[in-house]
Image (cartoon, rainbow, N blue to C red):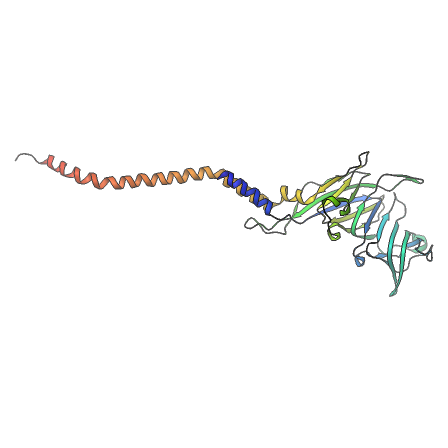
Length: 315
């Protein structure tokens, strides 16, 4: 029975669906990029930005008016090396919205912050909403080292599975200790890097969050992603990268519902021999009581007359 319980436990865990997981990345990086799949949530407000180059050169050198709406599948990148100006690049189709008028563009648009000529930024936060990359490979350029990820941590969370009677699904729990992202490496959530493992929809691989500017070097990056796989590339001579299986890590090790089920099955296996002994003792006790009940009526009728006869003496 203990062996059967063990196989039943393994089979039950394999039948349980993987929990929904997500990762929270808190980093400081000089470069971030993402592919747009929801333009309405990727709007870039132009106040405080100057055009370095426009797709048709018609806006070069002018301060941006209104807001920029990148199109679907456009690539948006934010770059800020050390404490220099912020550079925003949009590659692909999009529109500039100004006073209810939409002016389309198609190509590469490069913007940079210019507080002296174009005023202050409307907001110091810029959106990230799509599959993307934080950091870049270490390179050397004519003006010095290229933009890199300066520091960061990655923390994984999960939502419990629905496993009656041990617990209901949907509760959030921490799936492990925060992982340090090494300086000079980068993180990718795009599922195209894992073609051999199957395509993941863009809405799952997307990074959700923003970058913000401050007096510190680079950009502060605060994003969340629901992808079950992340790729963390470390600096060095090795070309292969580390893949983080968020879903498997969360389910097997930390799901409180799974742990409750495992603990219950372990207790059943450990208590099974004791239960068998108690049941055997109970049955043996009932058998002994039954034997005593059957022997008493046979003994008493025979013993009583003999004893009574022994009491009779000569008168």
